[in-house]
Image (cartoon, rainbow, N blue to C red; front, side, top):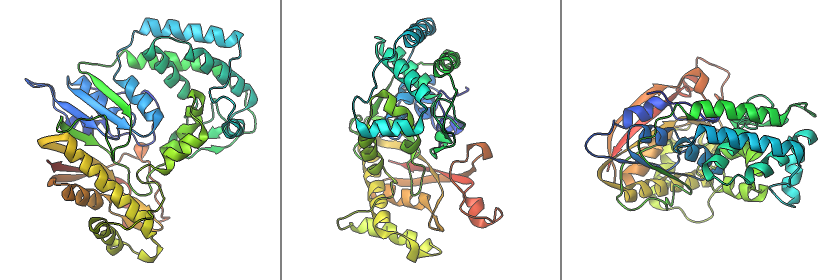
Length: 390
């Protein structure tokens, strides 16, 4: 079974990991959960194999991608809706999705040319008037595909799809409306090739709360939890999200509260958190450079995440975690050890782990060394698939 990408995503889980973890449906239809569902790879594999799935993510654009990935849609109706949107956008201007918010307007003026801004306002206003929820969602994802890009298209930025946007142009002659129409065509081509044999639900939420998943309701969890110094997805995604009504202040709050955010704790840390921090410090080449409050906050977040997995998984269930390596101020961070200790604290037991090489085209963490042959550089090219039992 092939898996296809609907939208650029900086750290998409390798489809083969989900394919290995999720069996074909047999006599029993399983419930698969991904508490940090990202672009929807796990959810897509689950429903393609006949299971039901539940996903959450704190990133609104990730929720949009994942929801679309598991939603049936009529291709002809989508194409008709896109044609209607294009026609309306060419003859009317619309109003900004962010209203009169001055900070968001300044943000848009920095990252987008004035011609593109007018076209994007017209398109997003027209899209908002599409009545069908899935068609409207698909059109928004199609528009985001020409904003969240490696090279500048609708915006003046490069590397937005890698969550490292930087403005590389002052003006642009890119035709947003024509680009949107082409994006819809490409997206529709991908959508019609999906298999959807199960039912999935996707919610905007926090893996440390996991409010959309009932107690002891899931058979398998497959997820890739964030880790220290991981990519800040919202840094790039906010360039698209402002066009769908999100304001910069709201997105800033989400970024600051995400797992792996470089922000410290202000209260005393419990014993298990200090134990996990000690593991990091003992393995660090330069422990004095580490920011201990930030480590404490991250360790506590990991424990909260693990406790929610224990609450939502059935006894005897399995959790498969895909954990990448990272560096922090020149120190190699063993994220797999942190994840394992958090899971054990929550009551899980270790089953297995394997290390897999990340293909060069899919590497998303910067290798913070000039010596490509060094042990750190080699470790930054791999990720660990950790399997824990409930």
